[in-house]
Length: 210
Image (cartoon, rainbow, N blue to C red; front, side):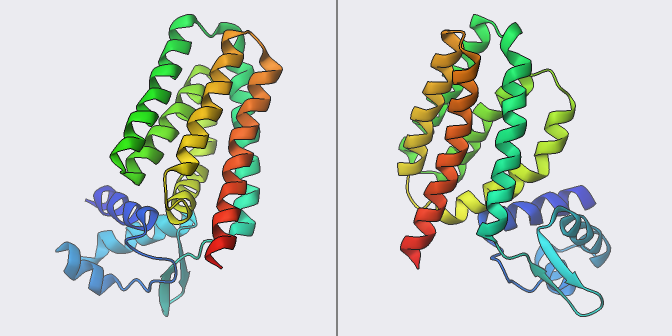
């Protein structure tokens, strides 16, 4: 039950159903979800550890604000760790692995056509998750998991159309081409460019909103 509550509240925060700054009262959530307050309190503690909620003892709990200054720190860590994943994966990647990356990127392309923003972001994540998996470094997914949740939340809030996803699709193709050409440096630079360009697109969207 507590895992189910945690996952539901986390997803609501990620997709913006619970917006930044929303006050979270355990009694209100208990009434909404039809469960006791204990698993809700446990879920809120986990979400606080994730950085998704902010709590002041015995006073209030709020959905954490989205800080684009923090986003720069998060993105730089992610592209650094994923660059390591590419370096670890590079010398044992097979043609079958490359075909899988191509398939995942085409899945992204197909999902974009449906207009489902959340599913498109999930498909984008699946491409990057495959690179991490190919690294065979079991510590990387653990290090990246919480950071990816924060990134997903940011991207859902600021990517209001599919233009950014089309750009990401093309950038994924550059990564794949570098794998095909057995060019490690190019693969790493293409991956970094994908993340850096995503961050620039977020900043641009935020500035246009302002």
